[in-house]
Structure formats: C-alpha cells, structure tokens
Image 1 (cartoon, rainbow, N blue to C red):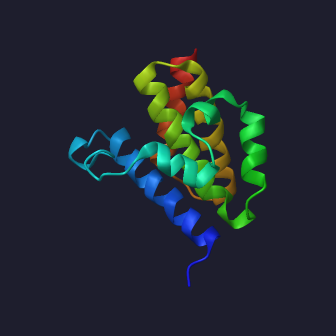
Image 2: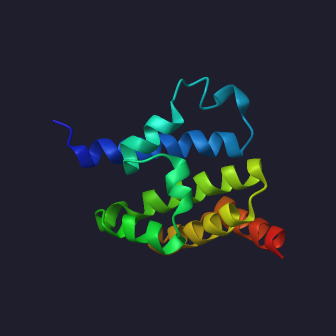
Image 3: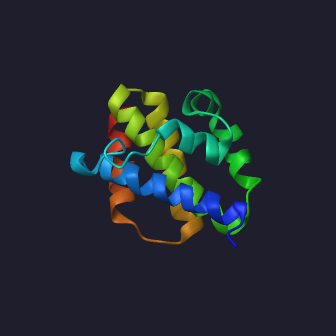
Amino acid sequence: MITDKEFTLRLIRQLTQALEKLILDKPEESLMQKELDFDSLMKDIFKFDFKELSSKSKEEIIEIVKERQERDHKDYYEMLGNLFYYNGKILANNEFLDKAKTFYELYLQTSGIFALPVINRINEIKKALE
C-alpha cells in the first residue's frame, strides 16, 4: 500500500521531471501534453498553489521543507529550484531566479551530488542577477 508520503514524493519527482523538460525546451514533452495540471500538483504537494508559494520568503519555504522527512529534502529543493528557475525565466522575474539559486544550492548541499546542469544554472542566475 502506498503511503501519503510516498505519493507526495512521487508527485514531486513527476513535477521535477516535467519542469526539467520544459527548462531544456522540449515542448513535445511539456506539462500540457503530459496532461499534468500544474496547479493541482502544487496543491497536492504543498496544499496551496504556486502564487501562494511564490509570495512566501525563501526562509518560509525552507521551513516548509524542513517539516518534511529529511531524506526527502533534496527532492523538494531540486523541484523548487526548477519551479522558480522556470517561472523566473518565463516571467523575467529576478526574485524567482534568486529563490531558484538558493534552492539549487540547497539541493547540491543536501544531495551530495555533483550536478553540472544545476551548477550551470546557478552560474547563469548569478550573471542575470548582477
């Protein structure tokens, strides 16, 4: 039997993969074509939509993640990095890009993974914010 935590983690990974494909500009694999409802995924994961999430400070979002199981933090940070990076690029929103940079850095710290695409995004964000 699948637990709520396992289900939520699966949703996080599904959203992360879909965002990754959007970031890499593979429209044939877009969220819409996969029939994923972005807002319903956000509500399933966080119990509120992206608009409400994005209105929170980085510190508030980090506290939300810290309430989850520690082993899942890396998945949340990767998903949040992708989420804010994608929306920051689409909307030309530097506040979102700054949040993406923070969550990507936390992802690298918590995962212990050397992820060159993430490092490249962090460097790209740093340049954009200068």
